Image (cartoon, rainbow, N blue to C red; front, side):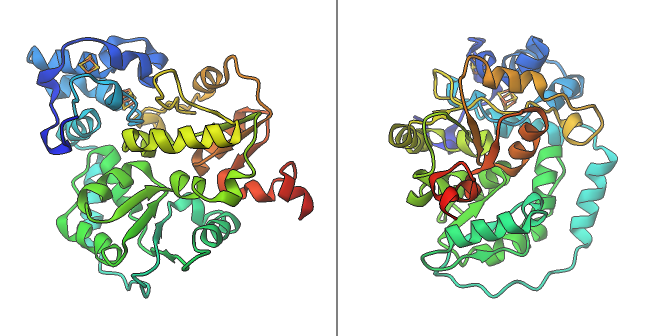
Length: 333
Ligand code: SF4
Ligand code: SF4
């Protein structure tokens, strides 16, 4: 495989259509224009970026298309670049202005020997879950929770806003002290890995899923929902991690035959920003179709929330497995 620095761009697209098979945006609209194939062919034929606005905003940024693309095109990176080229929304301008005006924050005292946890806002809204994650990940050496979680940077990446270099530096400065950084946001994870190539950067699912006490709680009958953004950003390496998890526990994973993760939701940019109504039911139906399962275990708190709204099955965050009354250890506590 080519190193990331040599990845191809849309000019290399052969039109093979393999990306359609895994693309939740295509599943939602059945419109070729809403796919990497459609965007690549349009750009190859001279269509202006602004004419592709709807298509560019339809992408969920799940990253599923990247591992299947035989031309090794940097499909997520290119989509983010196309968003940056669209005429800015008011939100885009505001977020950049706010980041420019922001004063440096006082950082928490850092210990380089511990991993750092960069947790998204949803986790701070569930303090018991965050405390459970800290206990699990910090059991050996403790863990430092970053007080700057880069939520504004994650949003800026998603909507195509420019992130001022000084904001990037403020975010990264405390993280540089850590050899291991765990992030809950898959898009931010992808970027942090590029910014800090020396660090070991892992998603929350990978970090928790490596812990034996949690693996012991997984069983046949569980559907384990991998966070697609984090997984596809490091697909080749993580395939082995999840193969091991499945073999050891007997759980079912949200993987298709190509070992691409089927996302639990397929929200466009406008749906994520609340400009269009959300309808997660079709994608969730596709995820559950033909499966006989008793419990859903998720890596991502936003997936727990979204699936819990629509599904009558128990939905448990991976970190809470030992507290689940139906788990062997949960029954004892
Ligand atoms: S990132 Fe996901 S939604 Fe976007 S084009 Fe690729 S597969 Fe489709
Ligand atoms: S998989 Fe890659 S080469 Fe094939 S149509 Fe999609 S973007 Fe083009």
